[in-house]
Length: 196
Image 1: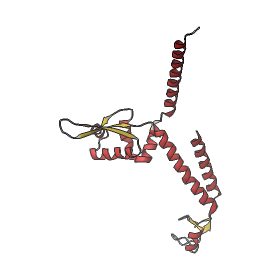
Image 2: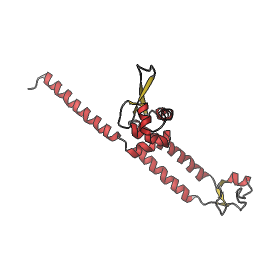
Image 3: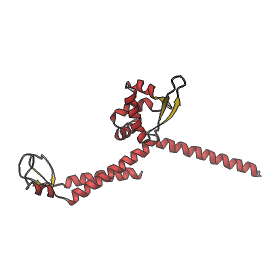
């Protein structure tokens, strides 16, 4: 018969193996693709940061001066990009004092784990926008001219006496059933993605 100490050790080892396996599965599930990283970073910090993110990704504590050299930008522009990423918690930093010069140097690390969270947030915002637009499409009538210069709701069309403010042609009611169907399809797709 197994002693009490041996049984407890075996249980701890089994639990530890289970937790390690679970953490690995979670980590693998949370890995982000390069495309996803580029999409999210460009949406939250601008297109120009993509080159910086590529230089910083999968590295730890990289000097801001090395990053500026890597992307061939001035240090002030590089810092501006880093601060934009920092505003979304996509980068973290440590600072160390240069013993010779006496000033602080910042060392940056890209937070890849944050991408999944931001992807979800961006999708939620997009879903809210789509729902608002869908509600507008369903609750209003829209008008345009033959040239489709501009699309106006009923109130706006009334203000212009049903004449196009761009070309002067008569405004006609628009059939927006296909627009509604398109918005419903995109809304449904996003709702499915957010449930995953």
